[in-house]
Length: 335
Ligand code: KG4
Ligand code: ZN
Image 1 (cartoon, rainbow, N blue to C red):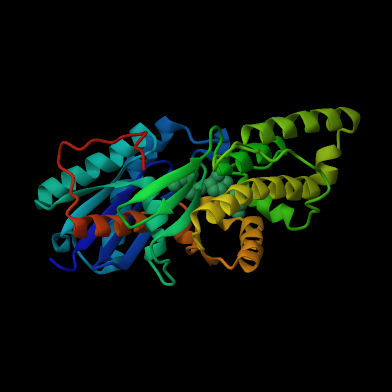
Image 2 (image 1 turned 45 degrees about the horizontal axis):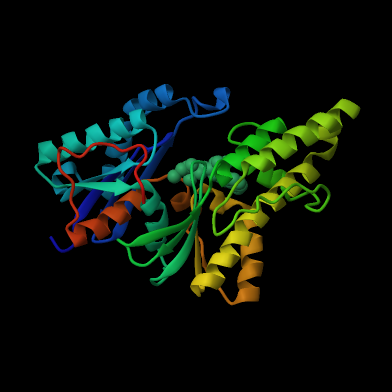
């Protein structure tokens, strides 16, 4: 059909998602976030797979119900193929394949990183091709030239930690709960970003590096707490603000360079770290100075979700890019 009804499933990390899209219009978007990992301070792959298995059917059922449809109405089933955790991807992949087989409908295999970028096309305002996208999440940091829905060039990426990991790992050093990014962001609002200076990971080209920051914060805190055991609680807001300032400066430095070299003036943010208030403020200021047009999707479409997978699947459906029952998950799938 010209306006296909697509059910999409996302299970690449620790969020189980299902969404229904009809002719490119989002009808429903349901996510079950796994709480089980908090006590471990990070995602435990085995537990993530098990939780996906438990959440999958209720989440899919809820997505169909919210859309006011039944599975008999579906024209295609889409699923995240990678990158992500193998066990997690397998749960969504097997569910989607089985459903497609039972319904005798086509299957679409979606790249999770591409989906983060195409989340910009769920709602207005939408960027026009080509545009520059900075994808910043807990697992990835990429600068991408987006030429079309199907053609994208990764021009820069992190050589070690992702931006979200930089937030989460430094937040952990400050004793904040996991995932620390949002906690650090909140505290940073009351702090002085110029109080402490940490190194900006200066990489050639458009690549990023964040492991130096984590090490610098670790040694700095060791030294200061040896002299004053209450150093962290006494300076928490300033520490958060200074760390956030450093991460944002690292991201903006490469973004500015990429925009200048490519001549692109539409700049898009994607991934969970797009929620960061420091990044948003700095990007707005930069946009005003450089004449950029900035695009940031609604928060529910920035963090892991199936709506972005459905949107990507819609473009693939139009292009005739279908998967088969032989398609299998690829934890290291490239963009
Ligand atoms: O895109 P996402 O939900 O999952 C991945 O695919 O990784 O991103 C999650 C990441 C976590 O590292 C989390 O700490 C970070 O996004 N994050 C934030 C904020 N909100 C979420 N980091 C900084 N400030 C925030 N406000
Ligand atoms: Zn993601």
